[in-house]
Image 1 (cartoon, rainbow, N blue to C red):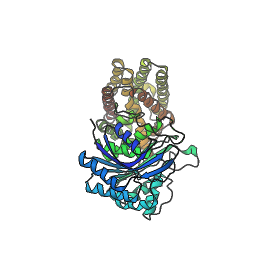
Image 2 (image 1 turned 30 degrees about the horizontal axis):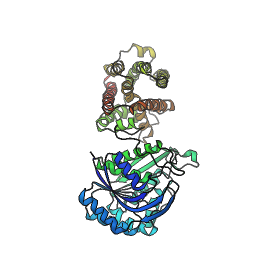
Image 3 (image 1 turned 30 degrees about the vertical axis):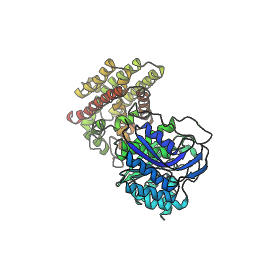
Image 4 (image 1 turned 60 degrees about the horizontal axis):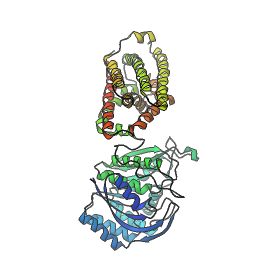
Length: 508
């Protein structure tokens, strides 16, 4: 059963990759019901737009009224509106029908460079539609056109901060939220524009609204299959909102949907091909390549995860206030933990059924062995010897955690064991990255700074990536009920990991 009613008011793309045709595919893929009001017919393909035939504005009005008066609507999504007269008709209909949620893609220029909105219609769009938009989704060229029309001068953006400033400026023109798409501005890892193509590493979409900035980062993909990404993104946002998601999460999920659509696209046509709209048919609750992210964004996980990564022990590492006696005890128990952690990963390699998974497991064990050697050297700086470590009994927290993981490995399958191991590996990486990037973290004179640096080092980052890729490769093959079982394992392991932090202060 369809979960949301979405009316799309946009132009038709004869090649099927953008416009109404793409919108309907996206909406269907998200389990919603789509209605359409056609504003223009186009003769186009992946190379360019051959011709445009506008639909009379009066007919557009009749089409909108026919859909809403009968079926009703939860979200209106607009795309190519073709003319100033049509924009006025659409704005009037939205107000007259008391539409609560509108997702507006200010389609002005096609991916191929063809003009889809006359210059004289930009003012009508700015004056009549922006003030009633729930969320506006311009790309950088469209944002510049809108701001120029409003006599707001802006240089070409070159940093993330520039994108944020531009999004704020557009939001001041009326929309509740603005999603400024960064696909036209690939950046380096440091958030600035590079000097050559090799510097294009990330894409950042900036969402601004209700006084909050949300940055949605993804890896830059070198692909020509980007036809219709703007239409598809806006329809994915509309679908997510109609399915009950809050706006910020709806936008995040939509961005990931498009990212996967580009990554899994087939090469169709001689120019800019379409994305793959049906890479996920919602048999699983996450998108390809996004299982770890899906787990960490679940509400039942977030509460437990926040207690883990924002624990007072972690805060003490960042500001240097943690008692040395507590940290020394932690170091001892961490080494004893690593022994069992290595056993568990060796067991995972044994339980693996392919050479690829066996090899990956062996790499993680080798990394742990290397880390244990560094750990002993690090302990010496705190006056703790290997002999002292091995004479110390495991704490109850250490025993409970490691035996839970080993029990999962003995009683369940390979994937369950990998998920049980994940909170440790992923958690340390996330904690260290946060502390390393946080300007409030004490660096000079902080005896724990080296610990932080150890877990942002390249070898540890690679180990996290290996672990995530292993889990991801197998998670997409599971049933929804099986995914739920795996999430519960992750939650329990996270609670056990948090208990490991709790033992420190009381052990001094």
